[in-house]
Image (cartoon, rainbow, N blue to C red):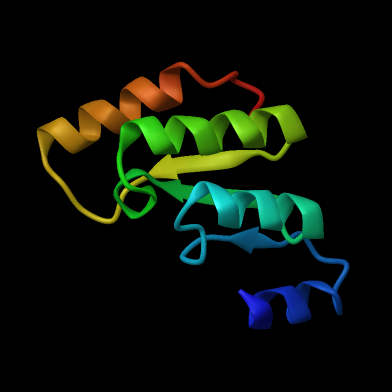
Length: 92
């Protein structure tokens, strides 16, 4: 994360964070640091659907657009991604 933040501080280009988002605490830090313009949320990396929903809600409240995905999975994983994405405001 520190390396990403350093790059972010030296560019005006839109910045996407991905692999470093592993829990709610990190998302709170990202928001406080204004470290991203967009985030990729991976349900499995966040610890499941409930924790991913909390992070999603933080992003929605902060106006940070997101991609909701996962690193792997079958039909159940795809259903979880679809459910979370479908319950997210379309503009996010």
